[in-house]
Amino acid sequence: MLRIDILTVVPELLDSPLSHSIPGRAVKKGLAQIYVHNLRKYGLGPRLTVDDYSYGGDAGMVMMVEPVFRMIEELTAERHYDEIIYMAPDGETLTQGIANELSLKENIIILCGHYKGIDERIREHLITREISVGDFVVSGGEIPAALLADSIIRLLPGVLTDETSALSDSFQDGLVSPPVYTRPAEFNGWKVPDVLLSGNPKLIRAWQDEQALERTRERRPELLK
Image (cartoon, rainbow, N blue to C red; front, side, top):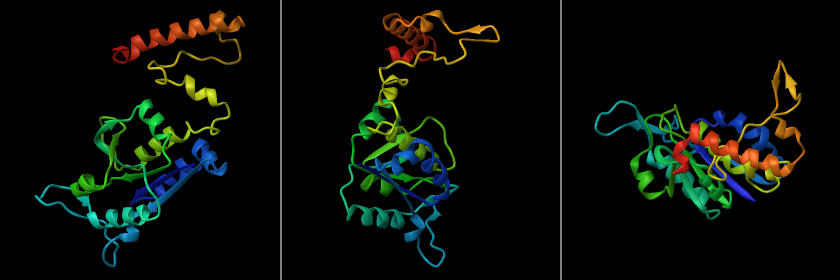
């Protein structure tokens, strides 16, 4: 069973996305474990401080070493972790391949940055992998962490009602997915392609492959390189 521990200073941001839909169902079915840890447990002083001003005088607060170190120390004393991941804007960009790889792990820690970021010594000595969800900055790593967790959990055996569904997702074969349709076959004069109504699996598959290739060429040509 996959276990994901998420370290954050704003645990409330993770309550809804991880307790509903596919992640929530995976936990209820006993296929995954998700634990959200409040770093303020190890905050310093009476106010449980987890951040301080940066050396050098730059604007913005920086997450401190001690709370993160103590939380990771507590967790790693209980079990081995395959990866300790920091959600970082300058990390490797999340891909379907990375999600596939991480879905084969047993224990993962995800650290959410906040404020201006985390003390560099955490990245140097504790983090094993850094992942970005894109070339942009958000208020903290909580939403990216939820996104990463969801992308991993949906790949676990038994999580999706039809396990073959994930195999046809965009990027699984290096292409984006072809267009999809459902009932009714015609609405407002807009028709479903005849081939999808033909009942011929061979013709349907050939059409889907052609559409996936054409859509990738138009929208994500870099994938074809």
